[in-house]
Image (cartoon, rainbow, N blue to C red; front, side, top):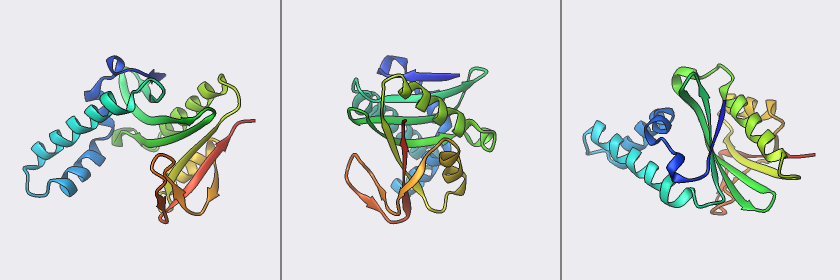
Length: 169
């Protein structure tokens, strides 16, 4: 089932952070190499949840979560860049639920939700090495529209990523 989170009061930070535990562990190692690993992970998680609550959930952006039997298994952040133009970040599936189609489910259901708003386009950057994510995006109707990924929030270009686009009909 798709859950849409549009304000901080709807967020369950612990369940969300469980989806991102692998990335949080990697970020903790990179950002706090001299700190106890569990303490570093907790610091990363607190910072992530604080960012979502105070900066991301600003009234126009939304977090989408796929829930199965009460467990949050996949998530993505959807930014409204301008009317009809969206940017996805942090599409992730919990490590225990990968290769079961949850990435495609959350992505396709998010697109169905946006279809109710009229004509739109959605962009994402996907690592050129991430075959699973590239396949998931293609399965959901995305195309590679740039050989260089663009972060539409910062304008940064990433040579190691493709720019992916979905264009509603």
